[in-house]
Image 1 (cartoon, rainbow, N blue to C red):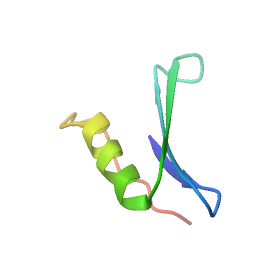
Image 2 (cartoon, helix red, strand yellow; image 1 turned 30 degrees about the vertical axis):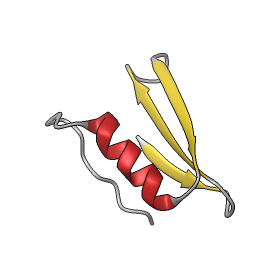
Image 3 (cartoon, rainbow, N blue to C red; image 1 turned 90 degrees about the vertical axis):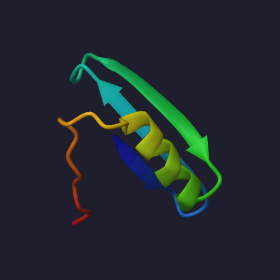
Length: 54
């Protein structure tokens, strides 16, 4: 799952099942709303891990 921005808008992108798996993308009006959506999609699944931006 990624939260991305182009400098104007935000999107949450989630992919399940590897490179050939299903993908879901949702546009969000703010970073805060994108973070809320990502947390909701992620739920409490123990295999998720956070990646820091380089």
